[in-house]
Image 1 (spheres, rainbow, N blue to C red):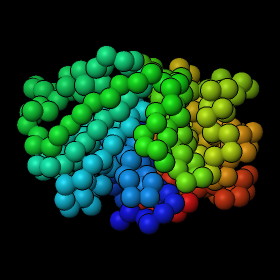
Image 2: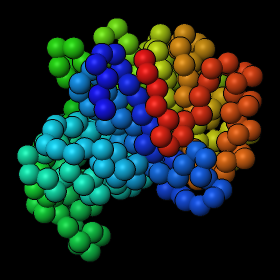
Image 3: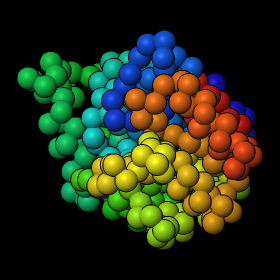
Length: 275
């Protein structure tokens, strides 16, 4: 349900790389990336991983939704054809992306995924109105008079986009699927997240694990915390959990993060935040 004012953030999928299920990940969840942001009565969706399927169950009638993709690797778009309202006449879905440049790149990329033999249906199967919007990461998307999205390019294979959503004097930053260079904070990210109320960051690894995964295009929760401190962020949210990190592992991360920066959150499926 939309808040009457302010911003509301709900995590529908917090897992990275591949969705996972079972008792070992039940607490934090196994759906892949999907975050819902309400700006007053407008709904924005960040990424379309498997978490977008249960999100779709909350939509009971025709409305407009806007999906802003960080990029189109499978774990971030695989839930899109399972968004139930796409089969609903009168439903309006706008899909935005900044990592492929202008000129219809995101429509082509997603259409390549949604066709046989990779998938049995195409975009033409849906009854909803679907529109595609390409921009260039680094641009500001003036969404409405009250809502704007600043963007920045991220360090990830095939490219990715980080977002800062601004509304009613509040700000949420969504920065996932980005690698870092130890000891060299990413100036693009620092500029994007400066003073943000909520900073959601790719925390796939720990610092101890990072050296074994160079070039994968993912970061650590400790690097996210360093960025949050340097940029004066309010709340830091650990996100995009490695599928091999079970609930016990994530509990240990939560405990260590709380000691290092009180108020830090470990995102989990279903977590709802009011700003």
